[in-house]
Amino acid sequence: MYDLIIIGGGPSGSQAGRCAGKEGLKTLLIEKDRFPRSKPCGGALSEKARSYLDFELPPEICEKEIFGARLRFRDQIIEGSRDFRLATMITRRSFDNYLLEKAAETGIEIQTGERVTDFEEREDHVEVHTKAETFRSRFLIVSEGAQGKLKHRIRKRDRSKEYGICLVADIEEDNEKIDDFLPGILEIHFGLIHMGYGWIFPHDGYYSVGIGSFARKWPETKRLMSDFLEKNGFTGKYRVRGHLIPAGGIRRKNVGRRVILTGDAAGFVDPFSGEGIAYAVRSGQIAGAVVAEIAAKGKALSTLKDYEKICENEFERNLRYALVTAKLTHRFSNLIYRVMRNNTESFDKFLEIQTLKRHYLSYLRWLIPRIPKYFLINNRR
Ligand SMILES: Cc1cc2nc3c(=O)[nH]c(=O)nc-3n(C[C@H](O)[C@H](O)[C@H](O)COP(=O)(O)OP(=O)(O)OC[C@H]3O[C@@H](n4cnc5c(N)ncnc54)[C@H](O)[C@@H]3O)c2cc1C
Image (cartoon, rainbow, N blue to C red; front, side, top):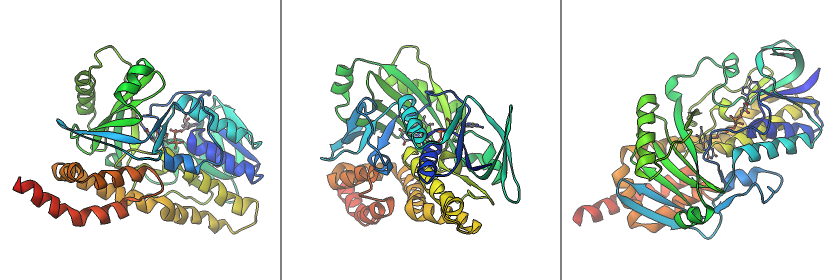
């Protein structure tokens, strides 16, 4: 009998494992792939995400540092930088592998190359089935990512409109050319697709080029991805990979009697930016800590519910305002773009959302009263 089983070795599962291991819980993490494995991702690790880690990342994992962004809206451009780091570019293959090693360091058991097929909650334990074995544990954390189906044992099927689609290609290029084109900045293209954007992100020896939308129309997204590649001069043959992404800011049931869902499985992704690593890391840590309160410190089983409250206070409320920001920005894209172009402060403050310095609510509170003024200025011109 384990204290805790974790399904999935992505950032959320590995952080839950590290937290449980540090608390001395007898923990087993089961991951279906053999690591290192790749995962479709833009690879932008926000400063917020990095600040949640309780260890430094080795320099070979940190490919580029990001201080600003170039926003393209149709044929117009806004570019700006801050004097502090906003994000670090990582490749998920090495980043996720390193996080899993940091979990293993705490003494937890890790079994890779084995898929969990199902689980059942019993009165005093959970049974977790793989093809080969059945394991028993007092608690279970499901960190299976966006595409897993085990979460539906805790909550009914999600509506398809709660998910977006992302397409991404990694395109090799010389570092010199990459640094010339994107010197410490990310390029983001708005106005291409409803409730989404296209991106060109700099990495070590390649660009991550992708498009994502929460308005989820598969054939249209595919066609827009081809156009986007071509318009930006990427005319070769590339491996384009697709992946679902949940929209955060929607209330979901994420706790069962002895089970917690974390990361993408819980729907914790910023519906405006598509950022999910920060919330995967943090929700995994919170879940591990809440289980330890019961399994190691003898608190009541009902303490498991604290997970939802802590997530709500730490970041879920912010994700709800991210959803409001996404809807406003896509509905009034021309107007918001004009405000940003005419007021560098509005762009600077927008960039700060990638750090813990600013939340969406404080941004909206700052921005909305200024909109009429910029609307009038522009209409007079
Ligand atoms: C194209 C794309 C680009 C993105 N770009 C960014 C970005 O630049 N920055 C950012 O912050 N976020 C980005 N995101 C979001 C980010 O990738 C996710 O939010 C993050 O990976 C969630 O981490 P996780 O641990 O919850 O899930 P995952 O990273 O998906 O990990 C889940 C793990 O569970 C394993 N698993 C699944 N089912 C089972 C099973 N039954 N048994 C055993 N193991 C199982 C999987 O193999 C996987 O390793 C992007 C997403 C997409 C799709």
